[in-house]
Image 1 (spheres, rainbow, N blue to C red):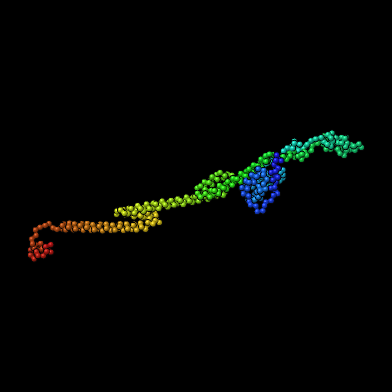
Image 2: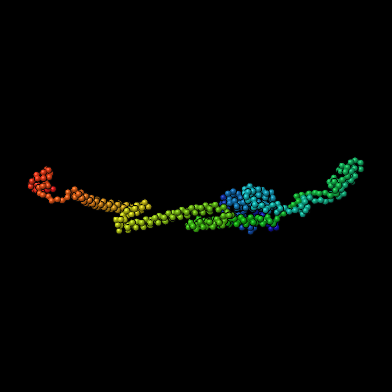
Length: 401
């Protein structure tokens, strides 16, 4: 398996040594799609290597894409069996994107270290002691503890046992295959699957960003605010859980604000139009009523004109109606004066008639009972002499009275 992956590993190994060309533009999402497609198909593509390296070096790049590229970068070291560089790369990923450590959470030493078959994973091997050849005795003194000259053996110190196995006849030594660790390096196929899954995720993220950018641009160019809002809402509903979409949310908020302003302006226009139409209807009704207005309807019409002026202070017909109101008021005042004059005359007639009647009544009450008057005698009574009258009094009308 490792031999089949070597062409790709050799290609990806240039991440650590390839330098970016001077003046290289920042990779866009289309470059990411091309790079991941090339790596997934195991093609050798220097542009893909430069694209990934540029993304890693650009601290302001899309975090979702950059964190996955850094994870791929770490796996490349692991696939090259460089565990120390893999550890450094994962530490850098953890420091830069603490929330992205789950991308490599599955990659544990169990995926590249397996139990050593030579020592059955114990890290040591037990065999016949090579120093005593399995006898357990000191070879120098043949297990006697003393030499031929009866001196204490310098090797076993008089114990007579093998100084290495201490008389056990066997010796446990670190496994030379695994260097005593009990495990040997062997890549699990799961590492390759994780690596390819990260490439596929990165490719899909870049493709989704391209799709979102195209949809956002299309929505922004939509002249109808209603359609623009619907398109942005559909986009946010579809991808809002996986992407921040801050720009799209700002566009949506702006479009909704513009739509609200348009609706308020339209409502204001409709209200103004309705007010104009109502004003025209009321004016027409007043004009029609003025043509056949009886005197008894003048007070009501004046009130109606006042109500119209209050309701429509900016009306173009205000001056005309106020003039009509003044004319009606003059007519009403003139009529009042005529009635006042009529009632005054009638009152005078009634008072004169009453006065005459009362006067006549009082005059009749003052007159004595009628008697036959002898000419000349009624005047003589004034002097106290009934016979003192003369006939000359008959010629004086005042005296007769």
